[in-house]
Amino acid sequence: MNSSTFVSESITQTPPIVWTIAGSDSGGGAGIQADLLTMQDLSCHGCSVITTVTAQNSVSVSLVETVSESMLLAQFSSLLADLPPVAIKIGLLASQAQVGILAGCLAQMRAIQMMVPFVVLDPVMVASSGAHFNPINLDFSPLIGLIDLLTPNQHELKRLCSQYALAQDCADVGNNGTQQQQMIRDAKLLSDTFKCHVLAKGGDAQWQQQQAIDVYVSKSVKGASLAHSHAMFMLSSQRIATTNNHGSGCTLSSAIACFIAHDFVIHDAIVLAKAYVNKGLTLGVSLGQGPGVLARTGWPDDLGMMPSIKLVSSDYRTQDRLKQAPLNGFKALHQSLGVYPVLDDLGILKNVLKSGCKTVQYRAKLVTNTDADNRQRLTLEANIIEAIKLGREYHAQLFINDHWQLAIKHGAFGVHLGQEDMAIADLTAIAATGMALGLSSHSYFEALLAHQCSPSYIALGHIFATTTKQMPSAPQGLSKLKRYASLFARHYPTVAIGGIDLSNLEYIAATGVGDAAVVRAVTTADDPAKAYRTLHHKWLQLTRPLPKANLFQEGV
Image 1 (tube, rainbow, N blue to C red):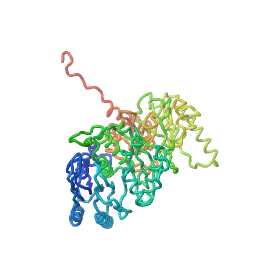
Image 2: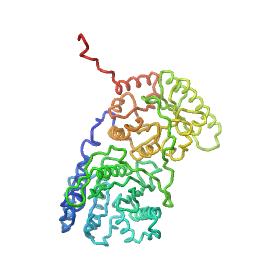
Image 3: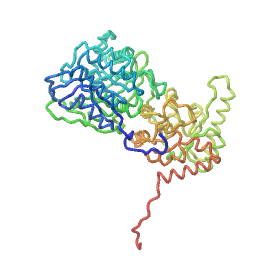
Image 4: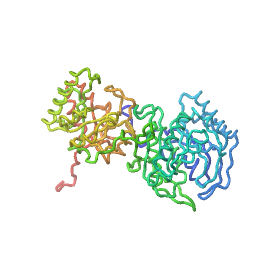
């Protein structure tokens, strides 16, 4: 995406195609019907391959009929010839024959398609009313290597682990902590067996009491931080007291497929889908005599509906590497960041401050991280001391990048940390000094981790391609930035960063983000101070327009 891309309401101009392979729910609350409603609501074009026709309402399932094998294959082949998917959600498979046919179709698709779709398997086994949809010993192993995400609830998780002889029974069934560890262990074993990500849902785990806790086991995730690949997380939300929950599992898995189709990494797709389902449950409606259905509420923009995230250690216990907000908090900004230069040269730093800049970041990196080059470390510290001195001299909010110990030692206004440094820094010590804290993020998932620390601002990036540092993530683009800003800008100062210059500043402002960080637009300019002033004045014109003249003044 380039800087002239129109910032539209939807992530993509042409809706991405998402398939649902599932059963039909004549009551409209779950299955194909719930999937298609979700896909439409999330700006995708939904296509369906119907596996089973059910006669059901909100109270009971009276009849289940499996479609013929030829009809199942014909639906798949017809869609593949004309409407290939970006993502596929698989729900109810009613027989072992259907599992085999689908495995063959997915393998063929991978062999002939240039673009391999992301496949989510929601292993539906029992209706919420208690009716069984498929044989109790249905074997999903033919799908190993062909699916990317498995989303079992507690009943399905236990059944799958028992079927593949993976799980050991929890000895202390009355202990919530032990049961939670068992859930994590089961999810990890299932992930290893199926060679895919697993999201084990906790909505039906009544032992979790007031919290609904899902366990997310990730494999390698392209475009995400290395620290968040091959990791386990607990995703917690307040349990929503409602009986309007029919189709919540179908909605979650189809929503994940939709967010993947909109080019979000799986970490993002999962937390977005969780928020989507949480709001759908909160606003669900009762239509019949039984459980009601989820509301369809559009793209998630309510921070309160997002799950909290905790990292799980290798011994299946939560750990505090994903930090929470210190009790005494971080210093608030004295003024908005505006155009926020990120500089590594003290000469440029001084000139930019002299030109009127009131917020700036000093980013100096060590060439090596060994203890051998003590002279380099002494030079770095001397430069940081000088940068902090300049910040005070010009009454500016000066942030030190990464080197939080030196920022504390020499009394900087604030420190800016990336995700990896955030995980190891002593945030309590930073807050205790009264410093401000800025945190980087490159996705919804990372921005939520930053939010859990309650920083002074959250940086969102990288928006455009940048050469200033190597990034694991792809450029986020303007449309994603608009989504991030709509979620976070009401709660935090937000600043976009990455490839921003005078040519695209207008498009950045149009997203609603609070401020804009610049690097090369200042550092590579012939006159960095003049470049800063030009950017600063342009930003003020775009974000703080002068009030229009009063045409109804007396005498006019």
